[in-house]
Figure 1 (cartoon, rainbow, N blue to C red):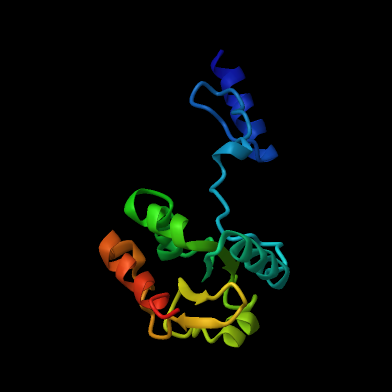
Figure 2 (cartoon, one colour):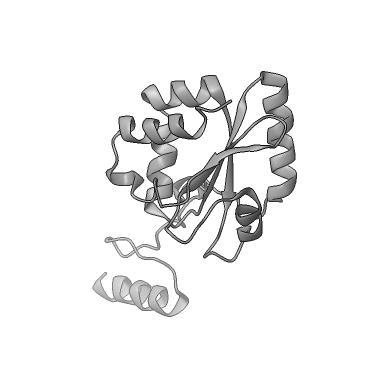
Length: 166
């Protein structure tokens, strides 16, 4: 029995298969266990912006464009904060949210610059647009770049400040 377990272990090591404690090959990880992709790696950000503006027009809301990346802990934290509690309520009532992937600062940076969002102080960085596409305000000093350590009220204060002028 010991020789069989050793043989299975050796075969697994050379084949690259993961091994469970009992010496049997483990089942491959399922797609469900993969981390959630908040920022699409393949989306056409300009086309999605046009769609978000159309939804905002129909719903009489502004558009919140969030520039971030899946590897960014603060971007993930901001998404979680905006998906639950008082922030989710605030965002849902007033804003259509568009998440734009900046990759490793090698994607959609031209769109961020066009909107007036500076990525130099960190991500997430956001802008609020009127439903006609006019930029109301944008972050420029890394206001949300420490989102994981910000409370809901601090994030809400930043968002309120961005779409206060209408």
